[in-house]
Image 1 (cartoon, rainbow, N blue to C red):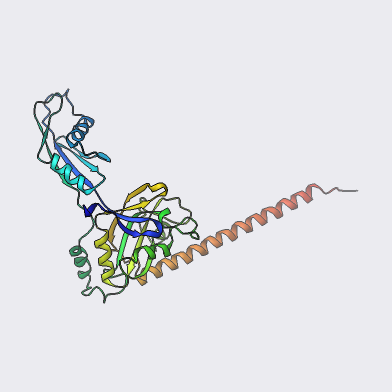
Image 2 (tube, rainbow, N blue to C red; image 1 turned 90 degrees about the vertical axis):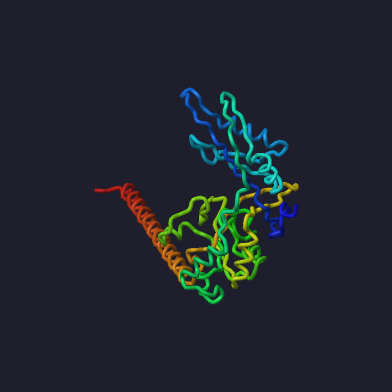
Length: 309
């Protein structure tokens, strides 16, 4: 089916967009009256896998658990197989050892958590932006916030193992002209009072494997195209030997005006202050070392002096 075919995204890096294939499964639990009885999550999971045959899960995990129900989230290799799983499980029942009551199942395809057009229109219109191309850049619907991007997929030969702004521009201008991009730096964010998001942070000296990027488009059409194209998609990379690596990314519209002129200036000033502080710290450390060296030499001279009468 067409919705299972990866779409070319940025071929110089072997990047494609792959439709997410996830399923939500809920199992209604029987009332346990005997305190000596318990329900095994593992047994429930194995029953689900058996009922799903011949379709196999890439992964299946418990996402929620209570006395009344167990919820699972499963990942499959295609949207087609998600639909098959839903048909095989939804409305069906299973029996567990030691229980006479049948357990009812529900299943549905997991919807993308990405915001809708109505949500970003409401957000910006509530802030007085009536025409998305007329508002100030960064303060209108023009910037995507993308979390979970693998660092090594967006580097260049000259970026020293860090995400490269130029590569980001080249990749995301597939959807429209990119005016600028920004990479979230937790060090600068701390200077501005923003709470660090540990799952996506990336900064100087960091060894993070994923980062958070902001992509700003010149026109609303580019932003709208990107939001639509990335909805419900994972990022796929073709590795050497034909192997595929897939990561889930989180896509949202920027609500913080990260790339507005005002906030860009703030970060630049914070960066300048940080450089000045580092330079002053380095200067003081060097001065301290020189002073310690002078004292050491003075001590050696004093100890080596012979007094003659």
